[in-house]
Length: 113
Image (cartoon, rainbow, N blue to C red; front, top):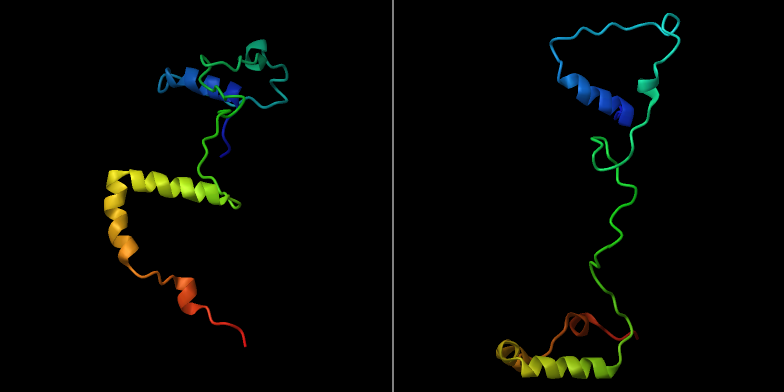
């Protein structure tokens, strides 16, 4: 079943109040040719409408991440200085600097002959 449009949803909500006390009879289109004005009157698309649909999504999209591919050496120097000035970070970085640098790429990189 597809989702109802605003008019159908409005009538569904209004009729729920009388559920069990009402009987619905389907009128064939050939018998009931003229629709009443109330069933064709559109509701305004505002917050008071139960079938309110926002026109636009939130205009503010949060940044999930930043990818930087070209950085100057000054950036890395400033970053290094900030880490050395931070007491907690320097405590963590001291044991790491004592470990010999064996990166994964250096370990598996073999020169082409």
